[in-house]
Length: 323
Image (tube, rainbow, N blue to C red; front, top):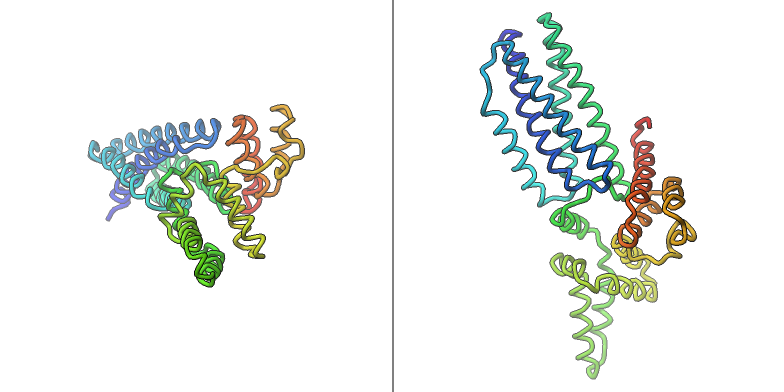
């Protein structure tokens, strides 16, 4: 195959992948946690659309067949991707986004070398622009994944289905010893307490025994109260892992008291002072607790954004990205 044919083939592939990239970015806009992230994703999608235009123009200039099918395929690919990823945790969806960006980056690098060999300066310049764009997106996605790995909350909010998928993925590692202990205790209860035992067994099984019931418990109105009760019982019985798991789930719901926050007197701070204090936090757990609390109480966008910036800085340090 000649260099010219290889270049045309790579441009065609890049049009398809870039169209998919644009549609993925647009589906992510609705998952943005803050207005700043929403604007960034919208800009990313617009930039991808412009890259599609530039690649298509170069393809036609090199004599490639005008492509009216590829954009439709790209949109379809993105729709299918968005549909299938609903059955998996957010981190898996983001890893697939990252894989797409790496493929785009690698193809652009290959195109650059082909352009150099064929002495097509315009193709080379196009490829260099694509490389820079995808390097920036790869860095951003890497930081978002690092935020999630640090406990989040990440710049992107999981959809309800992805939240459920995340619960499923974590279920295998849940501290079920707590449930087993309660069941064993109930089975040893005397005959005259049978009815109470049956009720208790049912409650324990409903709360932690199966994925379906765990999801139901998470979505019911009394979930916070249930978690607090489970935490108290676990601490009373000396089961620290179960107590910490219940506390962690409670923190995810934003169900913490003011004295549990990492910033003393947080509720009495002005919006500006609260944002300044949030931005100074450096422990992922503290940042996560504060964001969840703020989102479920006053929900001030500037405070949430400041805390998200703090988490992004910690995530960049964790993956070795310069601020």
